[in-house]
Image (cartoon, rainbow, N blue to C red; front, side):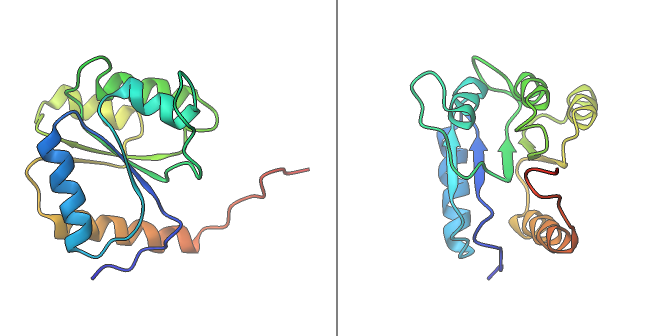
Length: 149
């Protein structure tokens, strides 16, 4: 249904097993074959992104992180603060998908360069329009080579 570049892979960071299953079903229902890596809290996500504490490093690094805010061990805002201090991960797009409608959470997320803030439950068609628009945007951009001399 939605055409996405197969090189775009996702990471879902959410502690709610039902939300995880719903997102996996949503990807399948909408014929999104892109990889969807899952972590249940911010610490687990960082371990997978960095390949530390016994976790295998995700390769390639996910281009889009779908992030819940209210999680144990390390919440979404704490995760984003850490992510934004890592030179290899700071440019990863982060979409907040949360039940929190708190203005403070929204402000904190956007101050940490969240690409979007979506309150659950949401319409998958709206979410996919955002992802499709980003994909088109990426195709228009010219990125520098990995090693600019």
